[in-house]
Length: 301
Image (tube, rainbow, N blue to C red; front, top):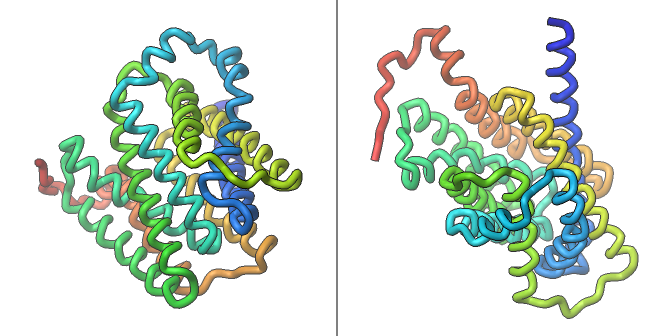
């Protein structure tokens, strides 16, 4: 029992490190948005990430022939295009928003995932799901109302668009068959690089900026591998809750690099989004114990 608990704690720390790396990656993106456009950031980061592809094939034992055959599978291709569009919106929003506000908006994605899963995957949506959506929507409105007066409205639009397209990518991922997560990541990196070529960069980054862009690639690959390692050893609900620690890291980076602290309304809105997600994650054990929603009606399409 002690050994099992030790393993669980170990993998929780692995997830926490990966989340810290993801937020550090966002921080590095924000550091270069003053001088580089979104397409330029994505081009150079994906270019550096491509350097790690041989290592992926070496250590994950992915079959190259199978990988190339799956690369153009329609759902995988659509998923990767949506993920790239989402990343473009997210990078663009970081030019205008604080890291904390960006993360708070990004955490609204589960709301859109529920809605798109109902529309696209024909998954049932229950009364409790609707309550969760309403709670999270109130949180988003609080953040939006606060940020319009304090930060750029265009940044809010970019961040919300990023959350929506990310949610779509997540739902489409459910339609992918017989493709492992490492292959999905590698194909995503290739699609990101190819799409970034549509607007070939006119500006050559400075040596300092190139160093930051290379660090982004290294940190993002490390975050992905660490998250996978922890995710497959923990319950999905526990891993999902740990993701929300990203807000703590965002608050810390905002204060250290930009001396920025969020307003109370921002945190209140984030608390509503977080509460909605917690209810969604722990809905079954929580409400079974409380005896609620025994006859919960679901809406299906």
